[in-house]
Amino acid sequence: MNIFPSQKSYERVELFLRRHWLILFFIYFGFAILFLLGVSGFYLANDFFSLKENNLNLAKFLLSFYILSIWYFFFKALTDFYLDTWIVTDHRILEIHQLGLFKRDISELRLSKIQDVTVKVEGLLPTFFNYGTVIIQTAGVIPEFKFEQIPYPQQAKDRILQLYDQFIKQHPGDQEIHEL
Amino acid sequence: MSGLITNLPLVIYILFLAGYLINALFVVYHLLKFGLDYKTKLLAFIFSVGLILLIIVNFRLFSKIEWAELIYEYLSFPKII
Image (cartoon, rainbow over all chains, first blue to last red):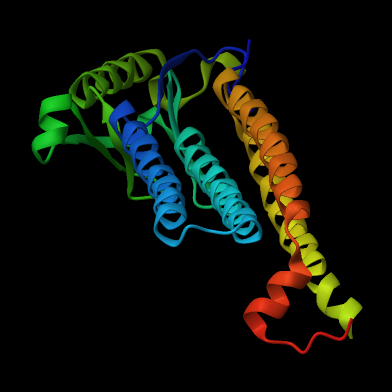
């Protein structure tokens, strides 16, 4: 079964990565705060101004509109989170970046083009929760691939280097043996 | 004049809602078209269901408001009726 649309029949997905769950938690937390601010603002206004029936209806309507907006922006943020994906197969690396709703970058790198792999874990939270950035220097058109805020970056780096070694052994002269 | 003033909130509301729904459709489209696993499909479903419920609530709250009364109260239009 294909995990991504351009997957070849002989290609096996080895790593399917998204940002660390803590980033998702920050999105949830931020929007929960915004929601609570709106609801508490409504109750405070109601208590403070003792709103009459029609004004109370207006306040409820505005609160409902506010929640509707939060709902939209929350899911837009989740869309960005879930559509940013890094896929490592036994043949290539794919970097899919969703930048807002109308910009989507998909970059691809054959494993043989890898020159160097670096791991960056910077800061208290990344160190504590074990997430960071894997930077892959390439010999291709795009000078580097960045797997941002992914969980277990060191393990990901080791796996990528293992796959690179396997690929080089199985594909002498960088020829695709499965398509010959 | 009176009809225009009282219908103005409804016109503005419908325009806002139409803009909102178009943007919401783009989110659902992206989740369904570009999502690579079941999670994005599930998100699209939750988003759509929540959206429908919230819009129903929002519309009911909108229709409860006496807009003419509010407009005359806050914007000090002369009452024609």
